[in-house]
Length: 277
Image (cartoon, rainbow, N blue to C red; front, side, top):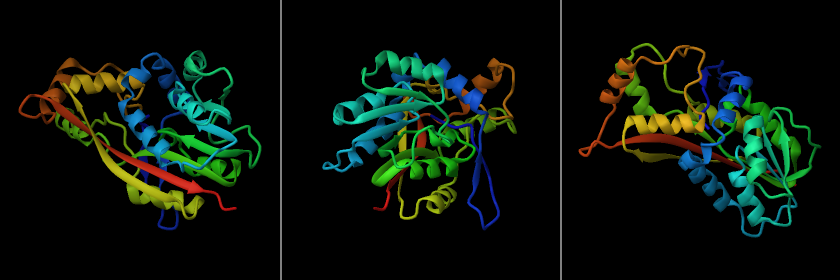
């Protein structure tokens, strides 16, 4: 899910680049959450369902790549919708793939691979489906170029990400509780992201909206992020456990409604692209 991302604003002639944690730490973090991920993945399921609903009804792909398949939740959904298609689920995390293999249909091929250099032939895929993976890459433009390479003419890319504004409430609460110390993953600004994608996939369709999820408390939000393997992984994070006093102060600073409930905002972004014939 959430990338430990920090935007590095490039010169005007270049799209903004995104700096993330190491690939090893990303794979390890998600692998450690493989057993709890599906129970906590409310946002992921919502955003992936939006992409599934966007796919044209008449579209019948012969080959599908679920890129960043995680536990295989949407690999299974794709298999149900397109039972005749050849289906590959690819992920950087061996732990996630172990979980997906245990739950997935027998005819799916599982691939432990880096999305920036996939061991698949040119023009070999009709549909690439990628839900909340690309924000983890230091070089998202390379992943978009890989998708362009893999797609057959007329093939479709459906991909989602998170944008600046995600977890704004949590970021503000931590800023009050522990000034100057980052605790929340950061994401690309919408205009920067669109510029980056447009540079690789001319004519791509962009869509963005804010999704608000309710929680019983800031503790419940923190627990969900932990179960997703999506805690803050930035290079500036403390290497020791956050002191209870700081965490309590964050919980007190988090905005609540009259019933003591809290909400978290997620700025969701989708890109849809059909490769020219």
